[in-house]
Length: 495
Image 1 (cartoon, rainbow, N blue to C red):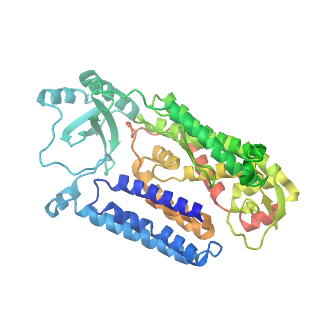
Image 2: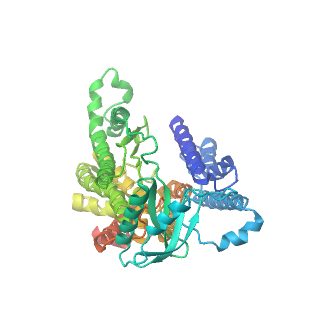
């Protein structure tokens, strides 16, 4: 029970952090009110557990209804707060303006001109008419918007040429962005460069000591959890029998390798494109899985959609390549048990129904063959538990929503506007999947907490090549194979 309340507390803090970051400056609705609306379903669930106990789950209709109402009221309150930001007399004129895909903030009463008349002339000279015919320059609080018509057939060459011209005139004073507005027309935007030579630099972007300390702490917490999963002995006996720690090492080593390789894929891809990034930081937790995963932070913008795609897909791809043999080995060493009539958990490692996932069912059948019948379940080996967690982590990261790897991949493939639309559809598809797989309900709710749009690349116009498009489609197909259950007729055919 204590662990459940700790998880609820962490979820509440995580949700508050996301809400505060996503609504800052874009709505007048209090952050605490939006947070309270979003946290209503978890609070109702916790209250149900207190009253009726953990074994009696609340009705699925109640949870889905509360989730839909929570999302509805959140959107209504958020939209009401957005309207209060714009005075009524400005709403009609502002609605006619094309909205560039840069962060919108409330404009100051006096127009900002970060460059003088002489510098404006230099800026206009940076746009050859044969490359990009410049029509007008707009000044925004955080950007200089250059609108015109793209003449160069290759958008990548056009961006490189304009960027070099701006660098020749202004040095590293500005970052050059190439994006599309809401009408689909390309424009250039110059924004202040946080890494400009005129500004003090902080060369230390990562803390090796902190990364190492978190790594050691996470190895310890995953080892303790591994001891419990292995059922080798009671953890309370560690003082008298420290040797039982060895039984937790297979789980810890497998899980840490999967998570580490996933983040290392992101890190190496970022370094390849000369993007400033921190070392992977692990998040230890003394219960549950032993960790809440790992992450890296990128401290410089992504240069183009090609780099955005490669950095985003490198993590799930590298993690899945490691997960696959780990999971197969773990399944081969798992025990076949009878399938309980009513499992207490959807993903019960002691009696897991492999048909819960299409890919998991295929791998289980491939590994165990005729031993695995339709009325059988798996008592997972600790390494198989780590492999299953890696599989689930791969699927969650590939969901094409906002800041997730899948959201970046879809953005790189189809552009930011189309990526936002696909992300909205994906949210509701996952919510519908929760009707079939109740285990996805909490993730479906979390997806609605996340901002739907991610940060654009500097050159957000140039499209990907066919090879990357095919790889992105395969990544989405992998997501479908992991999260969809095995069709009953197909399962009967295999058995």
